Length: 209
Image (cartoon, rainbow, N blue to C red):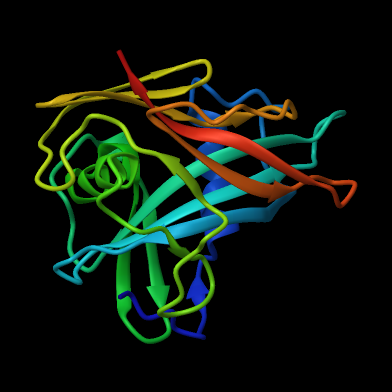
């Protein structure tokens, strides 16, 4: 399981996201994202131990109404040869050194782990504690492979990103609403904390049929 290092990262995740989020088609804030707050999320393990996979939930409080986003990120020790706009930037990690921070919906290892989670073949891990499964993440397994999925394409839209793998399709829901979902087959639901302190549950991954 991935080890969570209690250290610094410069620039921070929130600083990186603040610069990158306004460039996405599903961003609906005021044109900048300077007031981001982490309100939930979890991690996924890379079996090879090379790629960090962080499934962040952040609320942008800089607009008239707070807007909450689900943002999967991946962290690598070397540059990945994919589209330039998939790279948020590099950051200096206090233990691991230079890390390349990517939009995980375009990272083949992260996509394989998202598909595995959706298929019931991977366990969500706590976002800030090492070696701790996150049992608050609910999964109704999809008919997708539990390992070895091959990323074909990723297409962004106003609500998130649709990912095609060799064996099927999934949607990453990146703009989160406040309505309580009914868990259905082929979905992942996570809890997050609303600005008023209440707990909200949202679908963040689903199989597209």
